[in-house]
Structures are given as structure tokens and as C-alpha cells.
Amino acid sequence: MPASRSVVIGVDSSTQSTKAAAVDAETGELLAVGRAPHTVTGTGGARESDPEQWWTALATAVRAAVREAGVPAASVTAIAVAGQQHGLVTLGPGGRPLRPALLWNDTRSAPQAAALATRLGGPASWLHRTGSVPVASMTAAKWQWLREHEPAHAAAATGVRLPHDHLTERLTGLAVTDPGDASGTCWYGTGPGPGGAGRAHGPGGASGEGGTGAASGEGRPGAAGAGGPGRPGTAGSGGGGGRPPASGSDGRDRTGAAGADGPGRTGAAGADGPGPTGAAGFDGRDRAGAAGADDPVRPGAAGGAYDPEILDLLGLDAALLPTVAPSGATRVGTLTPAAAEALGLPRTVVVAAGTGDNMAAAVGLGLGGAGLLDHPVVSLGTSGTVFAATGARPADRGLAGFAATDGTYLPLGCTLNCTLAVDRFATLLGLDRDDTRPGDGVVVLPYLDGERTPDLPHAAGLVTGLRHGTDPRAILGAAYEGAAFTVLRALDRLLAACGLDPADPAVRDRPLRLIGGGARGRAWTDTVRRLSGRPLVVPAADELVALGAAALALGAVTGTDPVAVATAWGTGDGEVLPPLTRDDATWQRIDAVLTAAAPTLLS
Image 1 (cartoon, rainbow, N blue to C red):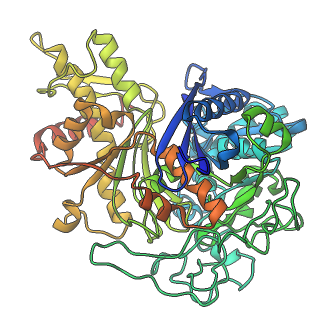
Image 2 (spheres, one colour):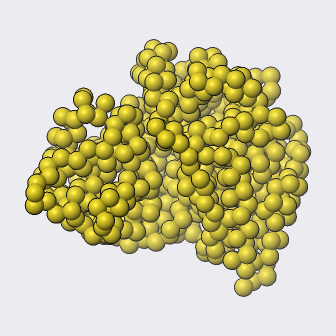
Image 3 (tube, helix red, strand yellow):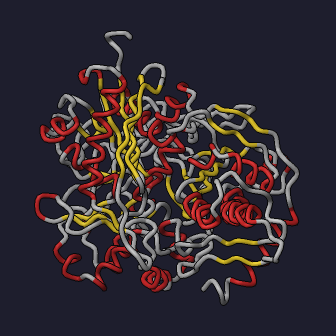
């Protein structure tokens, strides 16, 4: 092993566990993965975790990764955290949590989400402002729930964070987020209108010279934050001397780099010079176009900013929120003494802003302006998601209109019930998870935790079509089918949100990238192939979220676009599986049951 090997660490802080990947910065070789579990508590729709446990798990996982990689701690140069989206962390004195975090799959806030969706002009206005309509998973609904049910905690909060924000702050002592994770709050505007591009403050005014498109989705957006020489500027930020993107014959539209102009553009969020951890240059204004302490409107990527009208509606003081860095690869600072001791790493380790887990997975797959655009992905984990990086700003009520972390967009459909729900059916039936066959007339809607897509937060699981002779393996197969159907039915809407025609053969035959724990299961792979009728690419890498975070960490050190880093590492490469004939009969049977049951049984 070379003595001079440089190592970066990517952290995946998910619902169930923390995984820390130690990665060779030059080759992308995954040297080791450290792991530590989380505890999720709650009944009756409640899902909570103690953020202090996340921090302990992060330190445990990082120490294990460095130890198992067999590298000296001094070889670690940078770290970035990717975290589960939407969770509400409320901080009190000393920056410590006031109460357990409300997680993304906590459905108690469904009434608050429904009430919020009718305000500010209704769903269309929310789509225009934030790209998403409030549902129970969104952080805005959780904050509103806290205000109504635990007003003392809401009033006592000295900070409001997302899970990855909180962990980055524990690493650096600085309150910072990125455009990708911020776009999942429903109080961060990603487009024109209040809080969006029209309100962006920063060098160059509301539109950047050399920019490649407006926030409405015309053209392809460039880098998050301010454009630099030779790089297209994002809508709402200043850009100098940008160049239009080049489009190759393979459909990979190239845009600008994410966030940083080079290794010199670093610094601590919120500091007007060298920050508490020694990082200089990112002051929340000059680099990010973000407001200082005297200005609550802080633009991030794609012209985005916190929406002051939404914050007023929520009774949420912008001073409680973190500064929005230009991208997840922005250098925030270095480790605090306490963090360095907890992780067993030098204080000189650079910390990137980090992002949400879905945004990091996109980076790990090479999706973004410097890689693949408009290529759909299905992730099969605790939740099921379908997403793609695109230059078109999405506006579909059935999707979350996220920003990606590199200045493009990341429209996403998410379900609450995926691998864990199907595993529960296997347990109830006393079967191994791969001991299955097609549903054969049985339909299972495995909505054991309510459902987000479709928006049925109070739903329970439904089984229909049973006969005396029904094979238990067919019931389990139907559970797979119901979960896969629920994810895949959002695919056409996703493609349309990317400005594509789902019926176009060139679009229909585009490979579907399959990731997450379910992608390693034969039953899952077979079911997705049968119900989608598409070829699949199953990446060889297991830890795409952590690998994407590692690419963000390297970007924070070198200024290299993290999507380009991941593409060079080849982390998204994998086996190509040919398509199967689409099982239209099963698809239509499940669709008919869902349509009939939603107004009554599932509401």
C-alpha cells in the first residue's frame, strides 16, 4: 500500500444505520466500510430517533472504516455526510437536540401537511415556489406538527436542522446545509417567485452572464452558486464568461462544475474570513450568494433560497436555519478538536457541506451536469424511490421537486413501504424472502406504514384475491409486485417531469438503474424487470450513497466536480440485464385494486 495514499471518507447516515466508506481518493477503490446501527422508536405513525445516537454511530463507523482499511489516520484528507432526508432536528443550548428527531417516515404530520397545502394559493403555488407540495414526510409539516403538539419545544429551539446538517455541524461547529437536502424541507424555494430565483441576492444580480438557463428549466443549469470563468452560472447567481454545455451523441449533456471554482474557493460557512476551523473564503455571501446574519434570504443552487413567506406561515425564524452552501462539495471547514478526538482523525481533515442521501446516490451513480442526465434510477430500500438528474425544473404534484447537489434538479417519487414491508410478509408467511412466485391473481398493497406515493398516510396493508388453493409463495410474490408497482407507477411521471415522452422508444428502452438493498435480491430484480419491461443496470458498488459522499469530500479538497469524480471512479458501473416482456395483466390488476380501494379502504 503506498505510504502517500490519500483517503476520503463518505458517510451514509440512514434510517437504520450509519455506514462510513474509506475510499482511495485517486482510484475510487473502496478500502473498507464501517457500520453502526441506529434505533427507531414510535407507534401509531410516530417514527423518531435520537440524533445523539447518530453522532455516536458516525464516530464508531468512521473509526472502524479507518481501522479496517489499514491506513494511518493522517492519510484521511476529507469527509462528507449524506443523511436521510426530511428529518426534523430541533436544537437547544449548546447545539444539542431538544427532543428525538421526527423522521421522514413519521406520518403524524399528515393533517398539518394537508392544511399547509391549501395555503399560499394552494398546491400549484407550492409547486411554483418549492417544486413540491407538502406531504407528511416534508420537514415543513413536521415543524408545524411540533408547533401544534409540542409548542414549548418549538419555542425553545435555538436551531432547526436536517439530519445531515446536524452531523456536519457536529463535525465543524458551523451551521450549513446544501441545496439538495434543503429542497426537501418545503421552505426552500427552487424556482421563480418568492424565495426563488427572483429573490436571489449575490454578485451578478438575478441572472448570471454566461448562464445556460433560467430557473424555469429553459436550457441546462450550470454550477450551483456563482459561475466562475469558463463555467456556466446558475439562474439567480452571477456568472462570468460561462460556456454553453456540450452535448455528446450518447445524450450526456455536460454542464458546469458543482459549486467550487477550484481548490482556492474554500471556507467556513458564515465566517467573514478564516473560520473557527481555519477555512477561509466561503462567507455565505461572496461565494454562495447567501445572506449574512442581517439578511434572512440565503440563495443556494438553481437560484434557490429560503422562502420568507413560507417561513412566516410556519412561524419559523430564518436565523434558526443553516446557511445554504453552493453545493454539497463546498468546503465548509475542518474538524473541531472535539470531533477530531471522537473520530480519531487529524483536525486538518476537510469537511464538505454534504447532502441528502438521494442526492448523494445520484452523485455516486454519475448523475448530474458533468455526467448522465435524464437517466432514471429505482432505489429499493426501507423506502422505494425513483429519480433522475435533469436540467428541467419539475412541476408535478406526485413528485418531490428536489434540487440536486450540483445545480441540476432531482425530481423524485418516494414510497414508504418497500423492502422492510415485503420482508414482514415473508416473516408472517414463514417463508424465505426469495421463496416466491408470481401473484397469480392475488394483489397485495403492502402499505404497512401508511403511504407517501400515492399520498395515503393513513393506509394499512391490503390483501385481496385469496382462494383455498392459494400458494403462500404467491402471496409473497404479490407483496413484491405491489411494492414494485407502487414505485414504478411514478416512473412515467418522472420522465415527463424531465421533459421526456415516456412512450418514445428511445426513452422507453433506456436502462433503469437499480440500486439499494433490494437490487441484490433475485425476487426484487425479477419483479422489477417483469413489471417495467426495461433493461436494468445493477451497479456493482454496494454503498452508492457513501461513495457519492466520498466524491463530495474529494471535491471539497480539490474543487473537482464530484459527479465527474464518481464517473472517473466508475462507481455507477455494473451488470446489464436484458428486458423481460412487460407483465401488463399483473400491472392492470394491481392498478384496478388501488383505484378501487383508495377512496375507502386506504383512506
